[in-house]
Length: 502
Image (cartoon, rainbow, N blue to C red; front, side):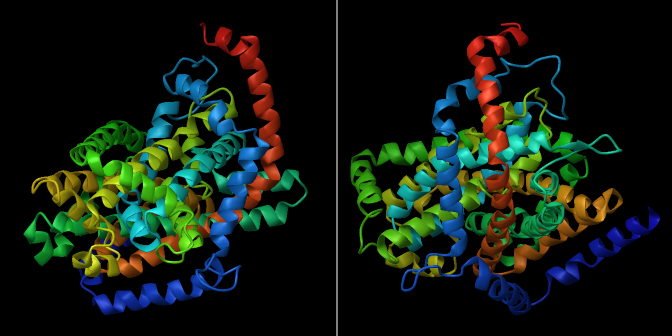
């Protein structure tokens, strides 16, 4: 243990030197990785322009397939799922580390982040208002994908010798495929998923959050424009204080932070929308018409679909398998029950919050205003949204800056847990502290790296997780279908109400 503590100490001592590296050097590092991954992840399956990346098609087909296979569970079971979240179906047989609501809050704290603010702005600036329509469609379809992931995570979770639960795509890939006669394939896919998640946590969970949130904060606090590393160091300290305590501390913080940040942000969005109520019908019209227009921004309908689904996947994480890690630790009697709770993630994240952001961006017109071209070119999505807020009032960007910091912070602490569990799966429990130190290093380094390359780097790493994960969902969807049928039978017979003492 002393050796690991010494290694962590050395990493933290080297932090200032790493963070003071030239921006061009960091750009070169991210750029080289981007180039290698992009050849596979963004391989164009259709000739011509705009491109239809393989990963986007992969996510669309899986979401449609699962929605159809489970007979639109994303719509049929929403009411029952709401009752579960409220705690009406708790039983004495529930087993887990956290409650269903805490697991949902932890997963939401990871998904409700800068993707909702920065990602939406980037999607609309590239794909036009029509991208919003496909983002909403992706959100509804993603509810079925998230249901499948969370259910399987509960089915295949295991209790480690230290008493902590280990669950997620790496578990249902290795064990589930072994049950189907492919143990080696399952193990390879599980390790591949774990590695992508570890790297993705450094990108999506750490670097992207700090880089994008700093852009919004710098518009309000001049000190961070002059000394950006100071922001990275402050975030590193705040994140480190929580993630050292493990899942229970993360869950408690998420339980408090998530509702607060959602209320603050949605309240501000509704104020802007209400102040421009006369422009709402035109904005909604653009969302629908440009979703199917052959001459819309960046390639018309296909361009809007690609941006909508890509940003929805990055924001809600449906199909990536990341949130399954948090849901695997929930205390429930039936695995499918937590899957139903997970339905609300893409709905809250994409259908509600992303739509509010999109309306603000479209109504204020910042997505195509010439004066913001430099911001759009630099992929500073959070800054672009801040400009949209500023069109209503000079002090509204301050509210956005607060929201952005809370979003980035909550996402970082949850993604650190995802990455840490995958790190432990690959390297073992005793190396957990080393992962946390590296994660914190990325928080600081991101404060001096360019946002444009970080957006590309993050997209590639996070979307890569969908390849192994969706293979598991296809293969194991039959088991989930049987479990769902059994659960619905118990529900209709009144058995579940009797178990809960209702």
